[in-house]
Image (cartoon, rainbow, N blue to C red; front, top):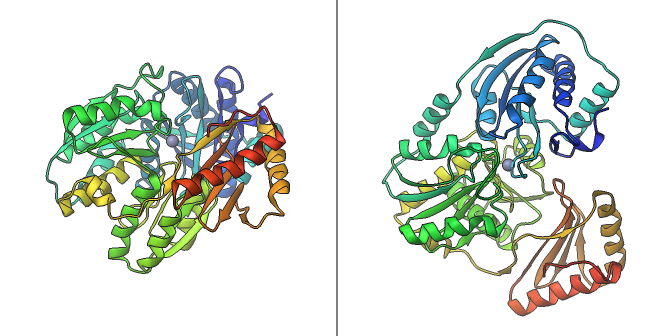
Length: 456
Ligand SMILES: [Zn+2]
């Protein structure tokens, strides 16, 4: 029996051989075939990342689709943004990629796009019930292969303006991003220093998760050593990017979003910009000061893209490193394209990244912090936390977990949708006030569970 827990909020994901069997991919292919015939056209693009289990899962998925009358267009091994690009560039707007993004090597999963939009949670749950109820129709399909990489390179080269080469360091963590990033940026005229750019599904150097500071250490050291203008780290499927400036400093994604917002609003003055609940309050202030419309949403790249599509916002992003350009690009999250836009701004201004970012006000802001917690306990814990703090003179935003607002800052606690953790973040106008907010959280968290291991 297929495991229900792998059908999650934004995608299907599990541990291969444990919660996700190869035969599950065949069942998912069959269910997808039924879904496509009902809600879209009977064709889909399939892709896979560089994990060791990806070819076998892809074959099983393909068979499930082909036995039920679907035209399967296989674009092979690529990062996720190129699958999204293929759904914009080829005739069908449906796509599925076998990937577990930044997760360790034993994981794998499926990210699905239907009619040009990420399949929402209800759609993912519907696939599960189609499998359980065996609602499949027999019909012979058709298989073809396409190389999407040349078209993607061409599109970016056509969009990229004013190249003036400088040196950049790229860390791909041996993920499939390495198949694209070095050659793309060399084609654009940059001098590329490669770190771990050979795809290797075992991830022998470090995990493809740049949100963990330990995974950025080699990149930071190499940027300093080679005196590069920029350090770039992609997550396992390159829909996210993290940037290091020329001094070796990590740039929080919400500060990068301030840079992008300034750029986009200079061209489209009243544009809407969408960002998630983890972002700095300076981002909202900046967007509003520049005459833009600031829209705060819950965390999750599917919610981000849906909001951007629905409201035709020009730009969106998340503190987790997803950036969605919908002005000169297609409105999907793409780590490579976001890098291109950073480089373009640097080139045109003639400034270093640290100089560009010095324009934005700083606050005392922590990175994302994590508390390990079992999936089934997260909601009850957060509800308990809310009960404890409700009577206090604070404002609570419960759009996604709890964002507790104080006159001088905020603290956030929310259940991660992709990992067995609660995630937290704090921001205040001064370090002293940040300590106060942390203390407020610490006190109430430990009141619920005195043994809880806190990372702050
Ligand atoms: Zn990813």
